[in-house]
Length: 548
Image 1 (cartoon, rainbow, N blue to C red):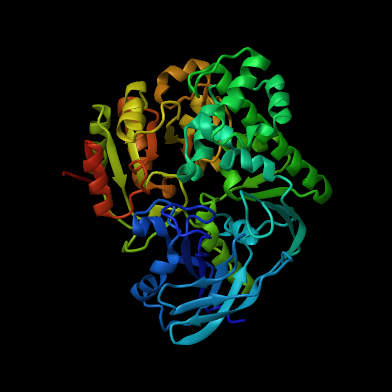
Image 2 (cartoon, rainbow, N blue to C red):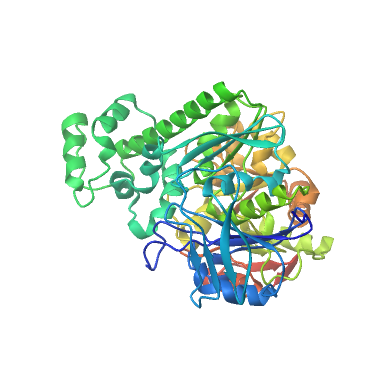
């Protein structure tokens, strides 16, 4: 196999239903790698402006022509999905087909690929392995004696899969749907949808909302037993009265509606979150009892459950835990491309999360100390600023390049989250800060590197909470993004350093630069249009303040 031949990873399997919103398939994306390095990456939603866009079959021919890849020589790796293993573009110029398999393989499979006017080398990689291999661009090749786990709502033949990496080989351990009942609580449960106030069109946003809401309540053993007895009220679609009646009989709670301020409902969701966390950790512990691995690579949409990630870290089950910033389906093309490069024996540099570079010429930009000083002064005055620097982040989280930033006060937190972004009242906003300040607010001697990607939360010292009240959640925790070095984000590092030194500001609100129902801003035009609609005070574009 030619190691110099680049690899194009594509996740674009068409949904089962041609609706205006994703149902079974979401977050289409593509990635192009050469010699282990990501050269191009695109989450389709950033290009189309459609949140969680799953219509790559409509866009791919034009994207390929824009990139100049019509005649290029590369290996194409498509990622499958539980709904199927075929891709046909609207115009028919790109056609990918592979046989259905009832066996989850540990490698890619040969496929037939018609590419404009020719056939080229095509492969399919199962959804499970594509998730697992999405770790490699950010952490390098798997460490020896590692457990590789994917956990999501549904992949190709499972929603949970485990593999071992030993002596340079991938060894299957298990795959199944045994944990489907856990993921269904977050993406297909009538009770949780009712409490959150979501309809089927909003199913992909329910998990994040549930996690935020769960912090308001407390786990209750009696509620857990009751929920299990009633099959988690999974099927009360259109029959909410069933839940209300049983709550009144069994707990003497008189509910007329799903009032999110009700303490009983808060405890119900907190109990669901606790069950998910406990059973996930038990399963991972059980798998590792047999495999006895030192390291864990953990991916899939469930790896966005921050409380569970934090509990995994605290459990000390593994020496190291690695989760990529695009652990959901938005990273599947990166995993597919990385798998192809791994098969060719290529080495992998460690990439930053800033990989969304379609239609953006360069990630390099110059700024001066005066530029940083101007932004710091505006922030100190209570201004709300949108940031659009370099390439965008891979995955669902803004990590400083496509962020809205402000002082971490309660007033500004409410204004940014509820008034400007129109998010629910109970959802927290996260902070960004330097490593020394993460230590300051938590009292910890060392900070886990997963906080680089905002993938764990921290208990904030009670005596420090008043210093950053806008980014401390109801349970006293905060989902901190930590900057460990200037190389990770020079502009944000310099800004946080100046704010700390000159203004005694040790953190900033950091939330994604998007408006309700829209993807994160990608281009300068996106940033300016969003800023105008949200009435932000100003925008920083490539280190410079832009007036609009």
